[in-house]
Image (cartoon, rainbow, N blue to C red; front, side):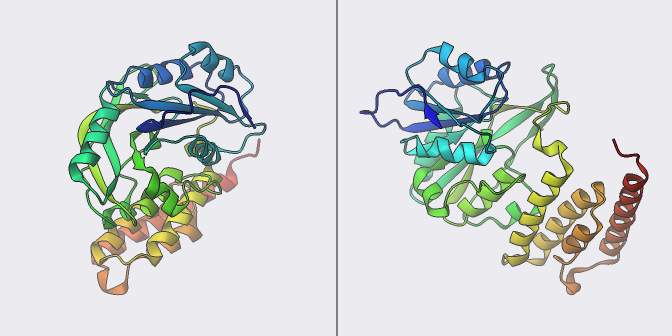
Length: 310
């Protein structure tokens, strides 16, 4: 691992922006410009190139802003490992993550810092609303989470906060939970939100301040890999099973996981999701839904078995 550029180490910035990247030479420029154009300018940027071979590092260096530090991994380690490297090379009170194919609106950092300051001690996790876009810039949907507080049960029922790009976290909270888990292949952001929200409260800025790219043809997209998707959701199911949740939240979580596992034909995992619901919480409608998901999973599994191997 090499630290190619080192900005002035004598000044501690308010916000550290951590940008993990892999094979994003064609996208990283606009991503970083969306940081440099922020109305809040008290920040540093740590870009961690996770062993790209497409010239991503060269594009970053050519931007030439002294606030940008480039760290390059010698071998590919994965997104969360890159984020951990970024955190280790940063010093700000707050850490804001930005995936290297998303962009921020200019007031993103300013609004989040102000939200955390206004809420006061005890609030160290902040999300924003965001817009999901296709590669051609067409808007797909708008996501508007309104969750707030400490240990929010609804977070177990779905990753309502979205990608890392929407999040700002106080460094002390990251340190308290050990930071991002590099062993996870998917649900990396969701896992971190659940753990951080156990030690600090969440607030959401109700403005669409992130443009989140959804590219179904992206070759490095984790959500396109069945094994990765399943392993991450198994992990979160286990977290939900151990959590102290009310019946309604357990049902909502089970619905989320049943849909994911049925879609991928993962019948055994679907059973794990079903077991989240205590017997007293089952309704006739819920039973019909579970049976439907089991049938769907079986069909998916059968169609996969019949599909000729490449």
